[in-house]
Length: 412
Image (cartoon, rainbow, N blue to C red; front, side, top):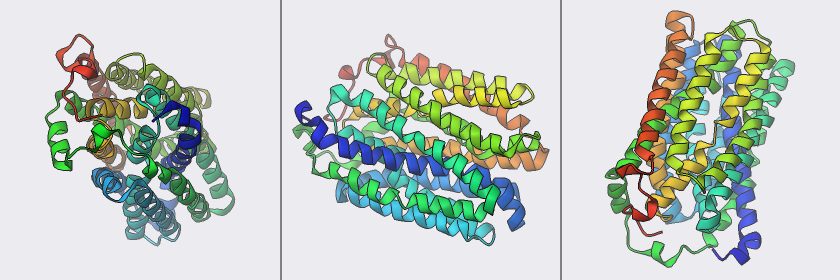
């Protein structure tokens, strides 16, 4: 894109993408608040509710590449608006749930399908197309940062409504917020008017792009490490409120922690978006996984206090969605823009397999053992391993970490 046209053309698209990303991520990240009260009210197990969230993550991951293909075929606007409708219907269904089946339909299937069309991969691909390559990493960081504000609003609002009126009214409040995704998706859909660079308009097919991605060693390592990222984050968003409740903490503390993660995520996303334009993105990505695992181990080794929980949330927030601009930037550098959403969707499928294990596996371990000890220890060990491997592979002097201009890639 011509930088002289940047404000007039790109800003409405970026604002719409940020609002869409913020609401879809913020509402979904706050569903952990309802695990205990909804399970008791519906007479279902904790693992039944967390299975729905696990299925949500799995469906999101499975459908993400197909959403990317549809965005190329039908346009981003059609995909994002359709996803916004599914997302809102999912929240409405959850608020009316009568048992495990309707929890699965609402929180699992419908929200998962909506996320595939409105959240990370699609939103970041939209932002990537709206700006020049020189601006891309910083702008992706800004969109990710603005998108982080959703949890800052959703978690405290959900907890407040639940304390005053019950969990069903709180989820219905989430449904009303989800309706706001519709106009945001429509505005972000203006990106369909922006023509790709001529080199991107070639005859490269989805099959050719897929074949190239699945043969790229650097991409495969990044996708495998992304599995652990999903496991850690969704374990926290699903089980942290329940863990704090078991430890006798104030129920509002869980909501405050999730909100604080969202607040500090703004600074983290901005920093890693800026840093990704200056240093190897893969090394930064591995550093996030390694540091995040150290912080997880520190927190769960000690008895939680309100102070330690809020410090933990702030530190995790700094390392939360900073992965977004790094992964999106790496995919754009490796393979170009035309099939970015689809290829990023393949990596994200790995992330969501980890998310499934983090949500459901954490619930199964808790139901079987009455504690989260084994779950967090596994998450820490896997995170340390993923971080070290990602850093070694992405190190500039390593053959798999060579600069993007020397990599075989699709046209930009």
